[in-house]
Structure formats: C-alpha cells, structure tokens
Image 1 (cartoon, rainbow, N blue to C red):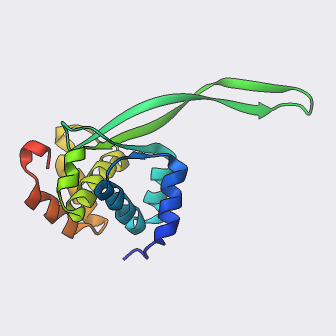
Image 2 (cartoon, rainbow, N blue to C red; image 1 turned 90 degrees about the vertical axis):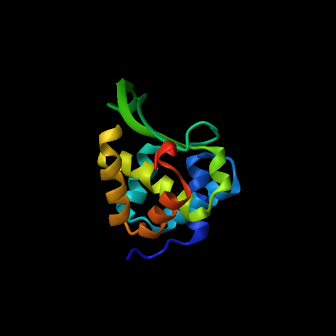
Image 3 (cartoon, helix red, strand yellow; image 1 turned 45 degrees about the vertical axis):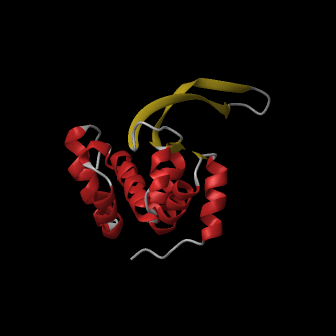
Length: 157
C-alpha cells in the first residue's frame, strides 16, 4: 500500500496546478485520490493532467490535447535563441457538478477512472474495462464499487 501524502502537501499541489474545481465534494475527492496514488502517478499528473469540474451533462470525460510551448536555450553567453515550438501532451479531465450529489468515494472512483484513461493512453469505449481494472490495481476497489453502485451505465460507469 502507498503511504498517504500529507493533506497540506496535496492542497498546495492543487493550488500550484491551478486546477479549476468548483464544489466541495469534487475537491475533497481530488485530495483523497492524490493522497493515495503512487509517486509515479502523482508526478505524471503534475506534468500532463488538467482537471476541470464545472459541466452538468457528463459525469467524467478524458480528452487528450496538445499544447505548444516555445523552449528557450542559451547558445552563447550573449546570444539567446528560441527553439521551434515543442508539442506538450496534456490530458484534460472534467468532473460534472451533479457529482456533488454523490458520495466522496464514488467521486474518487470516477476521478481515478479518468486518470487511468490518461495513464494507459487508451481512449474510447474499448478502454472502459481496462481503465476500471487499472484503478482497482491502484488500490481503489472500494471507490470503484461505490461508483458502480451509485451511478448508472448511462453515466459512463
């Protein structure tokens, strides 16, 4: 079992990421999830996941997108040049406001499931079972059961 991160560390981490989380239950679910994931997953989330939690129509969605950034490099003590744009892969995850009506464990399960989509790099309907299995491997069995009990297949669970 992974040792829990300090709650304050996770809250500071969330502040640094500027994740847009509206709703106490979804925020608490993000904190509980991030306290328990492995360092590898925590670092991956830090570098390439953005959580947005406002929408009413869909309970969870994993959308990959690529942003570009320019990389600066010093080539000479006096001269500085900018390299061409570099693609940076990022995953955009959102959690819907109606999740506020569900238990924290269910929300943790949904968030873990969406992060699993990112982590395995598989998207689409064929990856649903793979994502759920990965979440269970991470140690979130109780949260998966809660999500499946509280939410319906029409919700994407």
